[in-house]
Image (cartoon, rainbow, N blue to C red; front, side, top):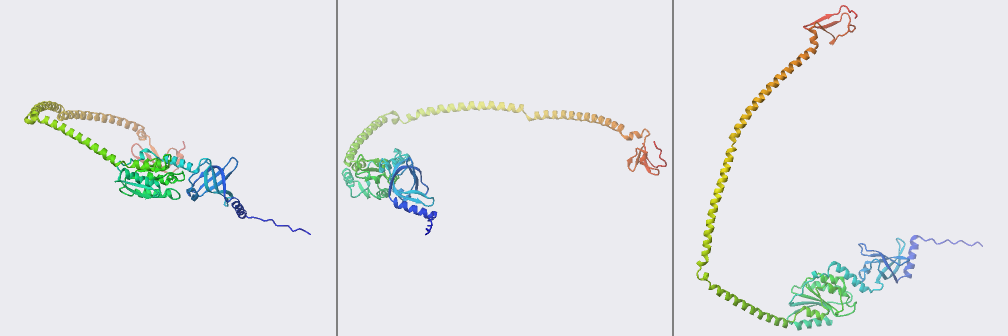
Length: 448
């Protein structure tokens, strides 16, 4: 019995690609992969495309904008990372790739590396520069606080401020200080507090905790809000050993919330005591100055020019007379000098009189006219003689002069006749003599 031949299954490119994609996604739906980031690029769509490689192989990776914005750590070329995602296939090119959902640095913690990255970038922008920092007011009367309303930090700040100066008003803007959305609430609170016109100072902070608990104060959105604040910002986050990005951007960092209250508000009793002491010192200084000037006035009042006012004007009258005499002597000398200069100018004008120049020019004109006439006559006579000579030469060369010697010119049909074979018997010719012309008829031609 003959065995039937089976027809092989034929796939289209799309079919085989779709099946491979399904296999990959089902087998590698959730995987962690370790490697080095390479060829990272972020187009205008804000999605990240890069290659993850080791010393033998590489794989394409895509980090979409939604996942990328949630990352604390922003990968760069050359970073050794651990990434989490799913393996799939990009059907348009037939490339397999990883859709990335999380990335962590290999070695240093993600939060710590994110902290260092943001700190370095903001430092290069100049947000930590001392010349940007505003001084705290010496005597604030209304203090704003951005923190949690339920934490111990806010109670410590309130108690210390009221103990140091019970006349200071406090405005609290309660916010979340950790967890999702905390950074956005803190940033918005800073912006809203800047719209309160009578605030003098802003304290932003919270109590201690882990780096994760304090992370809201390491977010860029909070750093930007602090840097743009018109109010001086006193940062009070965690304990003395805790440093956040907000601490570097703030106008002043307090090691704790309690210390922030002490830095912000001076002790009223101490200031009043010091003010009273300064007032007493000022009063003594003023009394001494008044006594000194009173003694000086009494001394001046005893002088002669106060008793005899004319005494004051006598030196000035004498000086006025002296200056008057000097003025008139100076005027006389100046008039004499100007008179001498004027006589010199008049002499120069007489010497340079235009009448004298005109007479000289007239004599020159007469002389030139005679010379011109004489020159013209000589030229006319010379040209006349030359013309006569030319006429004689022309006459000597003229054919008419030959006629005077007995010769004649014969013309036939308007042309000079130079040989007898050009005419025949009976032709009429014209003969020109020295005086007159003859019209002749040829009777006989005699060969030469």
